[in-house]
Length: 144
Image 1 (cartoon, rainbow, N blue to C red):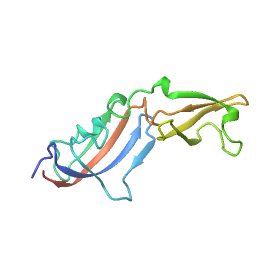
Image 2 (cartoon, rainbow, N blue to C red):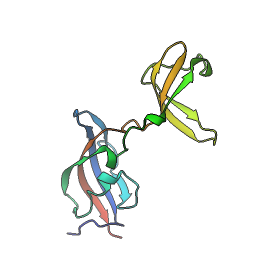
Image 3 (cartoon, helix red, strand yellow):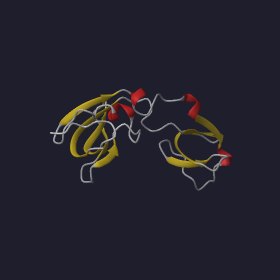
């Protein structure tokens, strides 16, 4: 059998869980995830686990936050005066919103807290600061 190496295109089925056991993403019921190994298309900790696998191989990979979505950056939190957010926009904690940077780039944010004076928004990736576990199965390989 052919072993995966950097530059190969692979297809994997996966289930990603948090340390609590909660599933945050899965390819179940969908096409497998396809990517080029070593190209930076997926998080580094998962990318590093693929070389050496063969089609049909299964493994569980522990990915620390620094090799996933990074540490949570306190500078990515911003307090906005409540009056700057239109009344019809919900600001309940956990609500996902989008902001526009001065450059025009759309930035996804999550409402952390809100009161009559201010709304605190977090632009960190929702999985920043979290260690992740992936159960993966290599289902396809196109050698480079």
